[in-house]
Length: 180
Image (cartoon, rainbow, N blue to C red; front, top):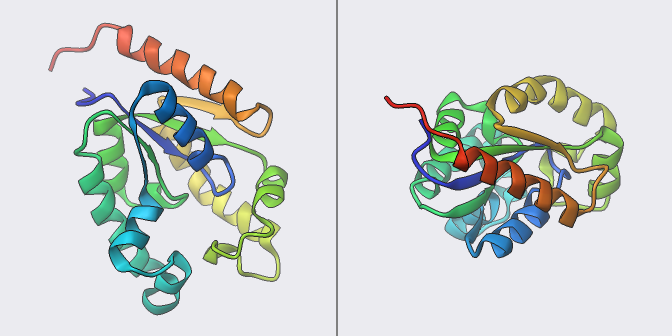
């Protein structure tokens, strides 16, 4: 049973988690939290620097700490990093403490949206398309399994996506809850 009315956005880089998250929070009068920004604020350095010095495993440990803390808040819209769903404890936190929305978009749309962004360490490779395909192969099933609602953000405007997410969220919150 869900414990709060948080909305947790999951999905690959470039799917629109931050943009849509801000719009959702504004629509709901809620607080917007970006887990990557929280990590940067706490460490005082950018995500690529954390990857450089601590590797992906070090970054994932920091991410798990931040997620465990921020999901304890009530009434937030949370934009997670693309790999936040890799750790089982993160998936459980998100599942238990929020309405989980998977923002999906095609690899082509991800490339279009991220090709000029140097703040994405996993794409600093000779073949970003291949890297995105590899990430999707691993993460896609986890996103789908965790999601309460899935939406293709590559085919909708941000405002249209927000309207659809709000409808699904309101419908989920109006349904009778199971008793423990």
